[in-house]
Every structure is written in structure tokens, then in C-alpha cells.
Length: 420
Image (cartoon, rainbow, N blue to C red; front, side, top):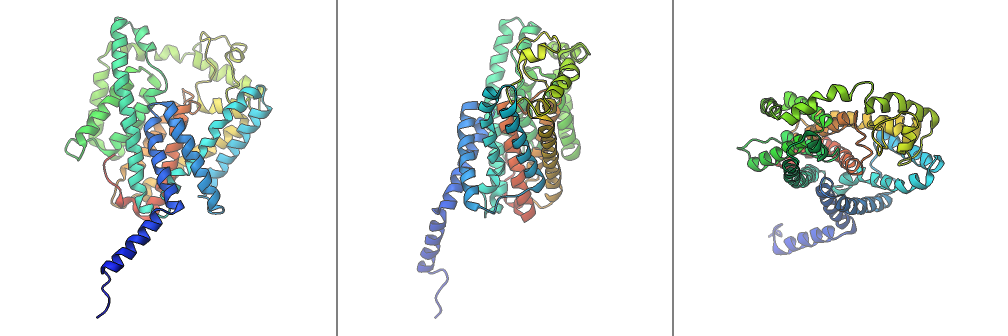
């Protein structure tokens, strides 16, 4: 009688082999990396200290794993070359710029670029699990953004009540950074589906409501416009029914006097005498002409701006535009490399959408593309790539796009859950 393949001895040998693989250095490192990325995704919208702890730890672990792989670096020729060129021009501008003492100290953020490969490496050899972990990391981000949004709603409403809903005082309660996280969380939830009948639909619907209310209460028109465009594109292409709900919510928001007052001031704030237009038209060209190789990150001061054009803000030290800010910080070469990098990522995300025809969570590449679009639209009037928290969120988005490229190509998308 032949030995039974399911005999106790065979089962124990199989379990032993699985345990040895599970405890091997590579598997252990990947488990640690996935755990670190989960913490990173959760803390990015919630607390910069926690995000930096998990982010730098994940970047260091990724760097070590890449070193051991030697010649097997995940290679995206166009994007990787553009990233390396951007790093080169950024370092050169920091060292040779007018304020090297300031700029060189800020180069540590470049180490986080290892996170571009972290999600892909963390599931190496198990691409069928890539969709699962992409959903978990996006879910961790949404949870963190929801917690921050709920706290913001309480804080802003309490502050507005104390000020008697004076528009100027209410507007000052908001900031430029947090509503971009709420924009991202809302787009992820819309892409995942907020249907009340779906598993976990009530929780997703509540989280989406918190994100949208918190985004409105910050009264940042650039975020509103970016969300309107990216959410409309998402809904009209993939979730038409949600568009009606969002349109109704937008009309309801217009019923708030503070929202109408904020929108009414948009024309004045974009006139030729406004701060932003002066920065774009008068200040940026002069700075780029004076420093064609860049000033280095953090080297631009308010006095540099005031010496070119008088503006009322006495603390502003950026140009309210991603491309112009990067051109001033890293020169023409850095700006060109950054543009190529971003266009390469956008093209990758578009290909990911086309490759996701297999059954599974197609909402993941849809969410990544919508958030990437929304952040860049807001980056036309805000320097969000220069903000540490938004920069870290950008890196995770791009890393997840790299991961999904392999998932879609190998047909692993069908294994991931639908819930975010």
C-alpha cells in the first residue's frame, strides 16, 4: 500500500517546512516591513512624530533588503532615473546654494524615498497578497484621517462658537494640510463604495461623512476645487450614482454663509494684486533667474520674497505652487526631473486601471489615481509636495501604485478584499 500523502508524518513535514520559511530572515523582514507600513499609513494623517518613526524605520529596513537583493532592484526605468536625478539636483542645490547650513539639514527627507519600493518588497514572492495589503494600508490611512477629522470637527465648531461665527476668525481655525488628508480619505471611500448594504458600508459611510464635513470646515477653496474635479471624474467614470449624492452635498454646503463668503472672495484672491499671483508672476521668475541651480530646500526666506515684491504676509516662505517651489529649491534640472517623475507615475496609474480587468478590488487603482490627481490639482495653488506630511503621503501613494502594477500584471488582484 502506497504512503498516504496526507499521513501525519507528511503533514508534520509540510508544517515544519512552512514554519522554517515563515521564520527565515527574508520572511521575517517582510513581516516587519508590512507592520511598519501599517503604522506609517495610520499616523501620516494623524501625527507627524508617529509617521516619521514608522516611516524612517520602514525606509531603513527597505534599504537593507534592497542591499541584500543587489542586482534585483525593482526597476521602473523612467521613474527611477527621474527620482535619482531629482535627488542629485536637490543635494547639489543644498550644498552649493546660498544657505547650505539650512538646506543640508533638510536632506534627511530624501531617505524616505526608499518607501517607493517598500510595499512591493514587503510582499515579494507573494504577489497574490499584494491586493490584500494595499487595501489594509489604505484602510489604515482612512482610519487615521477619520480620527483626525472627528477631532477637527469638534475643535473648529467649538472655536467658531466662541468667536460668534465671525468669518475671519472661523477661517483662521483651518490649515492647508489636514483638509488634503480628508480629501484623500473621501476619495478612497468613494472608490471603495459607500453603499449602506455592503459589508461595513455603514462604517464607510460614516467615515466619508466625517471626512467631507472636516474638509468643508477648514474652508480651503483649493481643496474644495481639487476634490470637486477629482471626485467628479471618479464618479462619472466609475460610480455615477454617488455623483448625485455629492452634488446634493455640495449644494447643501452652499447654504452655509461662511462657505458663500469664502467663495465670493475667490476672485479678489486671484487678482493681479493678490499674494499668490505676485508670487507666481513676479517673485518666482526672479528667484529662478538668480538661482538656476536652486537654493536648496528651506533656504527661501520671507525677506527674499519681500525684496522682490511687497506682500502682506510676513511669515510666508514658499511660492504656493509645487513646480515653482521645486524649481527654486532644486533648479531647472530638479524641476524637470520632478515633472518626468510625476508624469511617469501618472502613466503607471493609468496603466494600472487598464490592467485591472480581472475580478477583484478594482477600487484600489481607482482610489490611487483619484487621490494622486486631487493632490496635484491642489498643488497648483499650494506647495503641498513641500509639506512633510503630504510628502510622506505622496510616497506611500506612489509605492502602492508600484505594488499594484505587479499585482495587476500577475493576476493577484482577485485575492484582495473589497472593504477598505
